[in-house]
Amino acid sequence: MERRGAKRLTASRIGERFAELRRDRGLTQDQLAERLQVERETVSRFERGVTDPSMTKVLEICEVLEVPVASLITRVSVNVSDYRVRIEAALQVCLPADRELLCETLERLAERLGKQADIDRDADSAGATANTTATTATKIPGPRRSDRVRMG
Image 1: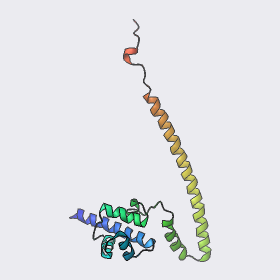
Image 2 (image 1 turned 135 degrees about the vertical axis):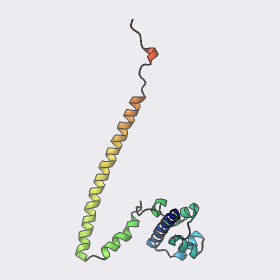
Image 3 (image 1 turned 135 degrees about the horizontal axis):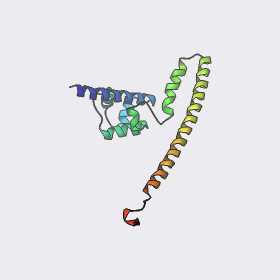
Image 4 (image 1 turned 90 degrees about the vertical axis):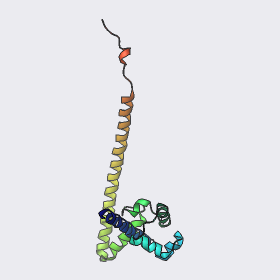
């Protein structure tokens, strides 16, 4: 019984994420239902976690919403535009002077993280080269026992 509750919780979380992504794109349940060629109630059931969409339907949903499948189970997205709404909402609650401070801080942080990402990429690249060299070196066969000359 506990396992079924865990499944429902997961379906509910995915449904909430599904609804969030739909709203972020400015779509109503009716509009999304039309694009998916399903009833609005079906979209509502998906979003509430009452009904689990088939894998085919999940792929269709992601295609319509223009998001990777992983975005249904995580807030991480490869689309920068997905973060625009969240950043705009954060700016709305700030005073104008604080908005400027927030933007400057975000720009500095992005620059610093970008530099760190470059360093990490370079390190990964160097590590991959070293691993390739090491792998190649280990594949070079040494003398076989039968090739050794016995000294008497």
